[in-house]
Amino acid sequence: MLFQLLLAFFSMLEIMGREKDRLNPPLLRQIHRINGYVFIGLFFVLSYYCMIFIRATHGEISSRILLHSLFAIGVILMLTTKILFIRRYRKFMSKVPAFGLTIFFLAAGLVATSGGYYLVTSAEPLPQSQELAGNQPDASQQALVEKGQELFNKWCVACHDPNSKRAGGGPGLQGILKVDKFPVSHWAATVDNVRRQLRTPFRLMPPQVHLSDEELDHIIEFLKTI
Ligand code: HEC
Image (tube, rainbow, N blue to C red; front, side, top):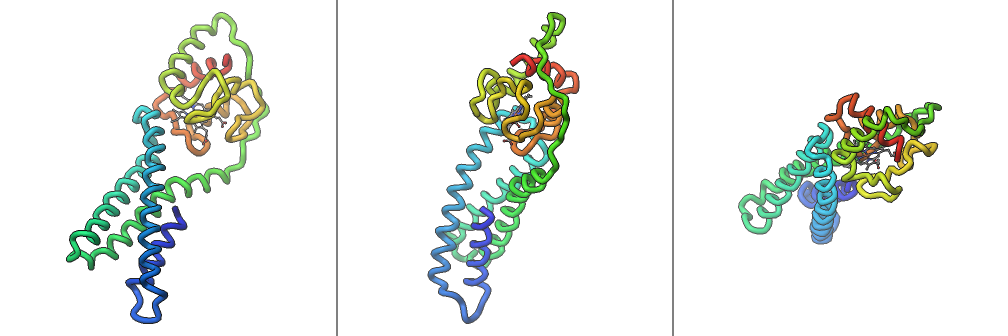
């Protein structure tokens, strides 16, 4: 999408911003248009998956996801208006470049709050804790485990299958504290890293800010049993 943005930006500059020596304007216009439609197509496919993701968070979204969504809404409103101007309200034609530029900046914000964010956070060094969890709970912990299971069913099951390793919205979590490393992030499979994943997740998972420390403990007790 970043490439598409740059292509749209460059073709617009070439068509509208030069008086002579322009590169083939009809061809550029064609490229600009096709590029725009492919962008819209991709945009809707990605929005579909983002909406499934947001639904699974029960509306508890982080400020990054909120910002990302606002950029997306801005892009789609501006893009629709721009296309309407071009197709139907041609007197507004002179405003189109300003709209194009605004869309470019909004879409750059969109990319920065997703791809840019992952680029920065994936450069973090991996935590190297040696503590390996995976003990079976004794009878006195059973109540905690059940509580954890309830919380898991409410907050996690939409994206994680506890009974297999099959991926849904997120990886299946069966045996997640019995293996050496988490399957996606490759962090050591420790209780501390589960906590870290829930508070400041690796890449896509929304931070579980609505859960208290105590609730995290319950969920962890449950994770040890699966
Ligand atoms: C909206 C979907 C979603 C919800 C809800 C969610 N997760 Fe995740 N989770 C993910 C995704 C996606 C990943 C994989 C990380 C990635 O691809 O960026 C992940 C990764 C993880 C991991 C680490 C696995 C790895 O391989 O790195 C753990 C542990 C985990 N989640 C636990 C939980 C728990 C416990 C809850 C509930 C409190 C929860 N998740 C809620 C989507 C979700």
